[in-house]
Length: 517
Image (cartoon, rainbow, N blue to C red; front, side, top):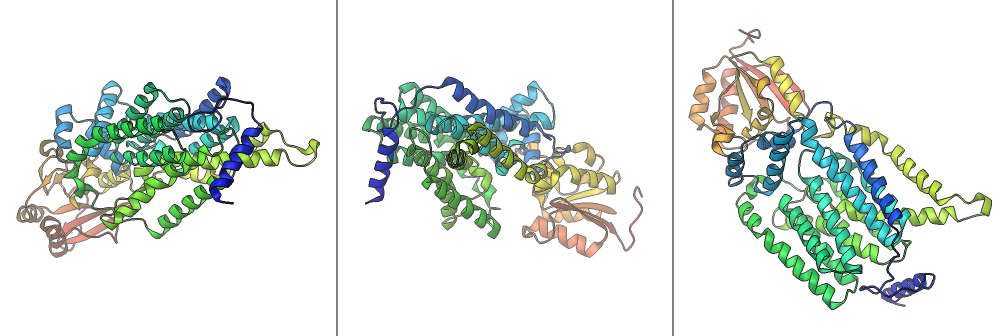
């Protein structure tokens, strides 16, 4: 028997045990409305995600460099943000404007910076639970939402002052609306679906990769012609609405030149996630639409990552946070498979020994929570990020004295300074020609190499902020002259490694003068 025939028989066998109901647009039985169950499927995962997001939201009062960029750009004026987007970071433009408005309403520092992401992940977790509930029942919905909320990657970006959590929430909304459109299509739902994906794509262009994943769902679900036509029109409208952002950001592709592709550890993680997703897709899901779930979740879990990995044939583009929304599909697959497993276990054995389903679901969730406790704790420390801008600023304040020079090598590390101007007070930025605001850039414009050399030679002490050892060195003349002057005319007094950076104090001659001299 062919695989397709086996699937059809499984659907037929499932339907034989269900009350009669008119077939839906995709040829499967619609699930009776259970408002109370759906409310629980939304609220329980959302509450857990909200609690996890608020727990340690300030991350011991620290931020890393990407968040620092958000913080300082959001505090620029609207004309300054608009001018910046003509030169850099157009892909984050909508997010910067949103954060500017939020800081204008309430400047609560790190809490304001991260609270939108916390709330977005809570909404996304609820929507994942609601989606699973509509396809596979209450237990599957609850576990899917809880799996999403507990996923380490989701927990990380729930406390991130960037756009990725908001993108994830909008894609989760779009995925839920697509399910509604497949089972009870209406013009209003298609419009809302298109708007949610367009908003997600304007927050970050790569959210558009959810569209082909959804397209596979529509085709695999054997939807009738009006549904396929409606999706095609909606997808084309989203793509057309994204064209202005694509044109604006196309000339800024140099900003992602640092992407080098996944490391071996990342390849193992990607492969492992894909294998788990495929295995869960093959495991029978409970509910009234058992075949619809893998057709909805598997493409979303796998396709966007695969597209970015294949883009490496032209230019490396894969970064896990760019496709954070793939965790929606992954959580749906894992959650429904766990629900099926819990159901099988709770109904096996003598009647007395059977475990109540609610107890089994609770035990499963608690076991997952306990197993992930070490990771959950680590996510709320400064070491969970690539660098620690706060620690860099504190070390600069410790080793420097008023009147000292400061050099950023490479120049893009000037972003470490922008959110903590007070800690760098009294230091002279020896390479800076035009400030970031005045130059409509992220890190400002630097002087020509000869002028940098002359200014460095006029100082007795220079604090140098650089990447950790082993990072590639920029070869532009400004960076080369910084290294040459320090190597030839200065002596290293101290070198301190902090998370993702190093702070080095140099002095002229062979002796290091005491601080303040």
